Image (cartoon, rainbow, N blue to C red; front, side, top):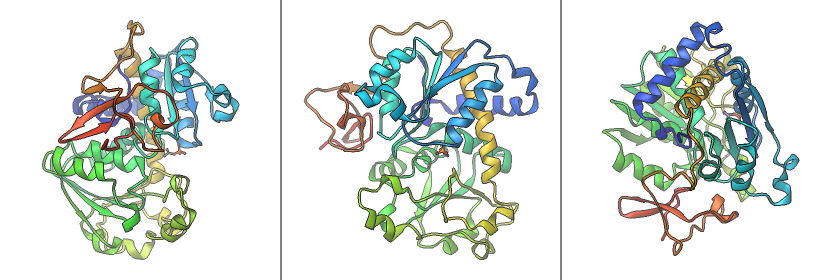
Length: 361
Ligand code: CP
């Protein structure tokens, strides 16, 4: 059964197929208005959302289907102690496809093992946000006309920013990609992502810049991010770094005339309002693309999984292995709070938790 837990669960060809379908949906809305008639999406949101949940909802309604779900875990039986595995086994009796957002890394992966219907990761902790990545790729394709030979600057919270992690993974699969990382010391890209860029990608160049001004002239895309207050265990540390990088009109003066500014949103203060009127500010156009790409994704996932029955044993990706002797101790991981199968993946010399990517020592 096909799920979308990480952007690389889709091959480059499949990603292109979904982007092309989204473009066709934009051009021919009526043609797709009933293609999911009778199908139900369940939105299981254990963490707040505006764009992702409502764009999934809008997307399924525009495909002719319907939507059930919860937007606040406190209104579900999670408060009584129900696990993710049990919740999805219940939801599959009511729905055909699940979009899950969870504050714990790896929760949608657990869901995908037990649901028996396709599970889409709508954002898990600091780890991954693959449908935001599809949104970003569709936006880049529409704004720049290509997904290769681009220099992209990622600015802000590169440590906890799951949209950054997912987009770097996805962009690294295209030719001629250069990445510039702009972040305070405390919010640098996690070790596992740096390791991935350095060792696993095809010729991606990356460098770090200390300031936005230093990076600006070379960028085709500037991907701004919010400092993720909700991920900090220490409030004082958040206060220290929260205003590190702010994009304003003055800083844009040295940018290319066709550079685009992306942001997954919500923003706090990292993009001054005056930038909104600059034609290079593409972040609200980016939001609308999110609905179309989620329409394309759900339509394809339902078609790819048509006729498949729930497996008798959990679906496991072929590169994962179980080892009861190993344990993940990352407090942000679903394995820290729920009784999940201990699953791991080899990555070079390291063994990593399959749910959160933490290195197992
Ligand atoms: N970009 C994004 O994930 O926004 P929400 O948190 O509002 O869903």
